[in-house]
Length: 398
Image (cartoon, rainbow, N blue to C red; front, side, top):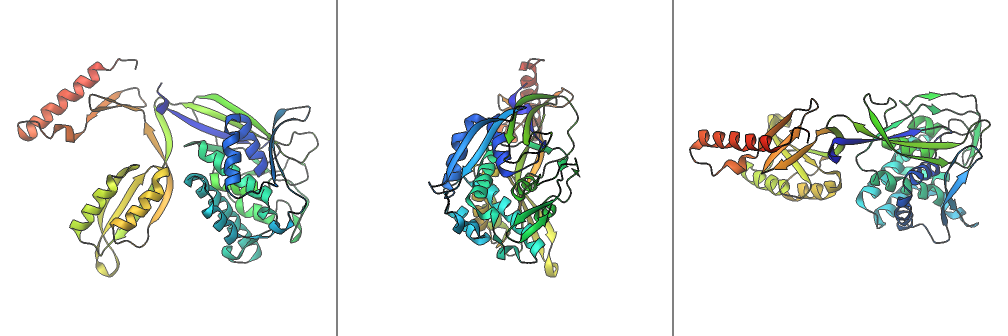
């Protein structure tokens, strides 16, 4: 089976709960080779040298795994009350890879929205307290880096332990789960295992909200590829306080999943001939997968061109800039969408695709047929010959 036919699922097993440091520790336990990159990303986010980062082996006499410790200096109080705007600016100015920065920004933004909803303020006016401290910033940037390194994975999570009691905060004692956690976990399945204490932290909840994992495992065979155990700092009676990561490769007969950036906007004030040139320039960009243009009626009964662009996620910023440079639009919408794809390969300029049933289909690009003699009939005859030859050369068990 080709690598493109395998889809990776990463499952988060919230044995003890979910916290930012537990997530980072579990992912590094599964992928210890990512430690240097994760620590470098955290430092790039502005973490001062006075804050010590440690990735350490750990065991609790039941399980063995990894701890991610952020050791703060004793005079770190000034950074514990950080406005959301400040954090966002700090990340924008940091020398971070685009994907890591975008994910860290999204995690913080989700926290700001949740805190704003709880305290009745605009997210832009939210000031982080505990989450604004360097240890939480390290957890979020480290998590963002590791999620980005995981690539186009399908994330799932177990039912989450709810916890009970109260937790001290800058706003006084708060009930558990903390109000911001409740906001972030709407739609998730939780259960009460009878153990008191904070089981899901705001940082952990924001990471889960960013991942948008499913809570039902997919059907079909899977191969267990990697596993990791990340320890938290708290202890609970009768259970290890760990987050376990299980990574599976799907054996689904050629069907795989990844993510694609979808950009959409409408144009009603650019000539058709100039728009065509602009879209051709966008289509030629590295990372652009497809450009679709359709006609529709907009405001005041105007005919508008609806534009949809599919691009690799890592090319999204470049494509966005090109949309603003090549067209008259002054705004666009974008999202990351999951897509199912089939294993494919090239043979003599013919694309061979393996269907889930095992059947192989062939398609030659029309550009390769442009010089065929005999007009339409000649092109179709050459098309059949090229595709038949490619199929005949492919071994039945390839």
